[in-house]
Image 1 (cartoon, rainbow, N blue to C red):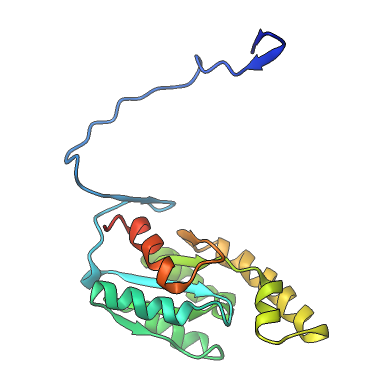
Image 2 (tube, rainbow, N blue to C red):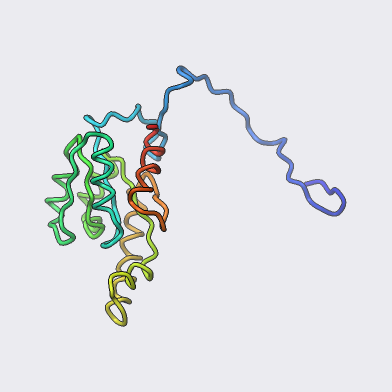
Length: 180
């Protein structure tokens, strides 16, 4: 660091710079924890939307499926993990997975390996209030939400911000998939 009028400046001279060759300048490629992925192909892909009950994940899944000409699957919150895992293995599908299903290790493995997973960030306190949960029920909902969010962080590829409608989040999904 070097001083200038009493203020420190960060020295960037030690940063490693690397030249990257680009095959097609206009091509979009998604990069995630799994590495580079080929361009998004709706027929060969599966998208999973994870979110708390009342977060709008079903509506978002329907809108994304409609946008890409894919099928939408919106199982109930109490659907068996086996059912959700089987749906997660299908291609050409947008799955609004109940967030509680991430407790199942087989489902988490399926999500990590083959799906493009979006997690809808939601303030659990606000959501509990919107669902009419208060007192002990509201506290239980928030505790469970925090537990499940931790599991979701281990499988997600993309975070969707809180405070936006499903209609607005479709734009975020498209951007994350590298589709205009």
